[in-house]
Figure 1 (cartoon, rainbow, N blue to C red):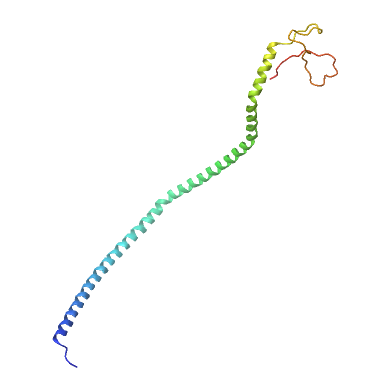
Figure 2: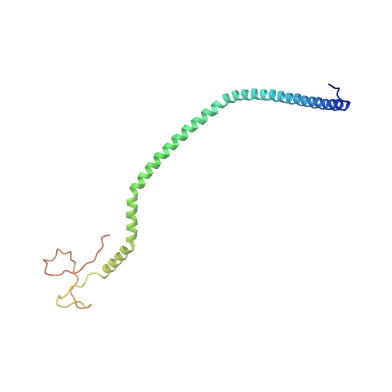
Length: 169
């Protein structure tokens, strides 16, 4: 074999020097990364210990708070059950009152005609009964039979009785 040429040796040396520089740079970065990771691991370990200690303290400190919240939850559940029972009772009452409400609505619908009827009956009472006189002479208001109270069961009576208006409201 022949000896390498001086140019090849210089290029190889330059390349080896670049590789060594790059390796040294990477090793320095690796060392820095290892130190950073190690520092972070230590911080995480301390933080973990602090959290565990706080959790143990907090657990003890939180027990009364948890008990109070559980008691409040039980009280709230009892209130909910009580309100549900009251709701059921009110729904039953509404069911019982619904027909009465419908009846009152019917009464309200009939009120104006009944009021008119009552007003007419009051006017009739104010006018009073027909004068009694000679049955052969009709009253001056005009010809025709006299008014009579009739329920249909009085057909056996041969005479008519004068009308008398009255209200029993």
